[in-house]
Structures are given as structure tokens and as C-alpha cells.
Image 1 (cartoon, rainbow, N blue to C red):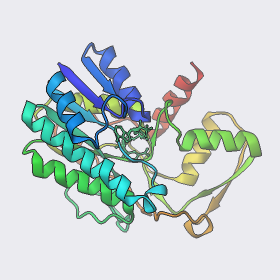
Image 2: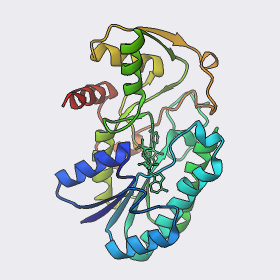
Image 3: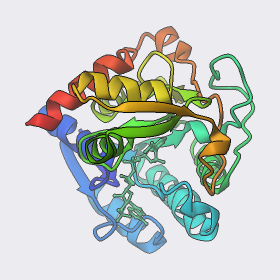
Image 4: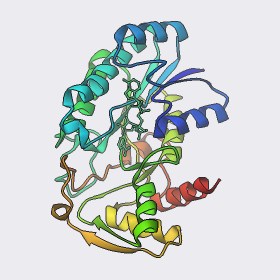
Length: 281
Ligand SMILES: NC(=O)c1ccc[n+]([C@@H]2O[C@H](COP(=O)([O-])OP(=O)(O)OC[C@H]3O[C@@H](n4cnc5c(N)ncnc54)[C@H](OP(=O)(O)O)[C@@H]3O)[C@@H](O)[C@H]2O)c1
């Protein structure tokens, strides 16, 4: 099976490439130089040349705060880029899997979000990712949309790395305690994506590690597992203002994964332990 991966130099894309090659797929990893997804001609030419069976679309404009000032650019990449790929996928008959985000929701829920619940992004990043979802659905009758959240992997800049760096530098950190969600280890997400792409179980999925925590609780667990003696002070969102508003409750329900007979991702604490182990290598 021939699989094109966009954003293959990114945090998730690198682990997706590793998992694909481990399983002996013919994987074509592309970064923005090989395949600029905003360039329609480039996308057409590349996809028609490679003729993949599957496109795993991991490329995105992911700077949530900067997107507030650069919505046009985020739109070109997250929405326009996804549309370009969806059109090309249709022409060559490839399956397409688009990675989306918990930020399509406003976070006012108190129960985990099901896949069919109304969306209402709070900021530019979420808006552009959501319109990417919509254009994918308009262009393809059959598609995979996988919404994930709080992603960490050894190849990216992420919360775990930031906490360990700050903890080692300062010995004390302040972390918000009134935003809850579920962390996601890239290796676990990559395995789920590959399991899903093998099926014809099309539609929208929510895929994060299982379990729920606040960013504060996540930080406490990171220092515990990394055996770092760091004081963690709980903060409110108001005490830690950011350019982009974040959903307060961004827990995604994984019910559909179970209903479809697919494999749920393990608990986030186990994912964190595996990440810390992998980081030592
Ligand atoms: N990180 C999270 O917490 C999180 C949460 C929910 C959902 N997601 C989603 O998960 C997916 C993977 O995220 P990630 O954490 O792996 O992000 P990442 O490390 O920022 O990777 C995204 C990749 O996309 C590439 N890219 C940007 N513009 C491009 C273009 N025009 N053409 C081709 N490639 C382009 C980037 O290249 P450059 O580095 O050269 O710009 C980067 O390598 C994204 O769809 C993201 O929206 C992430």
C-alpha cells in the first residue's frame, strides 16, 4: 500500500513515518519543500505522480496564538491546503485521513464531546481547522477526520518538553488548573491512524489517550514520572492570559472507536511513561 504523509517533518508526521516503515508500507513523507499543500499545482502534480492509496494529512499551521494575527495564512494552510489534497485524493481514488483538533469546540460542555456534537471554535486556529474539515467533507464522500488534542511526541516542541525545561531551570512552575482535556502521545495516535486507514470505517473520530486531567495535573505527573523535584502552583486561566482563548473543557469522547471495533488509545499516564522512556534513547 502506497501512503503519502504530509507534514512528515512535524511532531506527529515523524512518528507516523516511523510506524509506517516499521510495518513495511511504501511511505512517501513530504515536508513543505517537497509538497507545499497551499500550492494547488504542486499538490496535483505530486499526487498524480505518486498515486497513493492513502493520504495521511498531518501538515498544518499549528501556532494557536500566532494564528490570531495570521488567520489568512492559517486559512491558506489548514483550509486551502486540505481542500487541495482532498481534490487530488478524489482524482486518484486515494483514501484521505485529516488530523483535526479539539479546538473546533468551545469547551463549555461538561461531558466528553461526541463526534457529531455542534462545533463552535473560539479562535482562528480552530476556525481554520474546522473549515478544513468542511471542505474535506464537501469534496469527498468518504473520508476520515480524526480530532485529537494536547499532542506530545519526541520530535516536537510540546508541553512535556517545556515543563521539563522550565522545571530544571527554575524548580518551580505555575500551570493552569481550570482547563481540562486528554493528552495524546504521537506514537499511540500514529498507530490508531494506521489501524483506521486500513478499514472502510469512514467518518469523524475522536482520538486522544484515555483519561482526563488539567494542565496542572499533567505537569505534576510529568515531574513525578521524570523524578524531578519541582513545585507546581495551580493557576487560573485569568492568571495566565494568552492571545488565543482555549476551551476550558476539551475532553473528546472515544465512544465511536469502541463502537467501530477499533483499538482505543491507552491511558495518558502510560503514554507519558512511554514518551519519557523513548526520550532517553
Ligand atoms: N500539537 C497539538 O497539540 C495538536 C492538537 C490537536 C491537533 N493537532 C493537529 O495535529 C496535526 C499534527 O500537529 P503537530 O503537532 O505534528 O504539528 P507540527 O509539528 O507543527 O507539524 C506540522 C507540520 O506541517 C508543516 N506545514 C506547515 N505548512 C505547510 C505547507 N504549506 N505545506 C506543507 N507542510 C506544511 C510544518 O512545516 P514547517 O515546520 O516548515 O512549518 C510542520 O512540519 C495538525 O493537523 C494539528 O492541527 C495538534
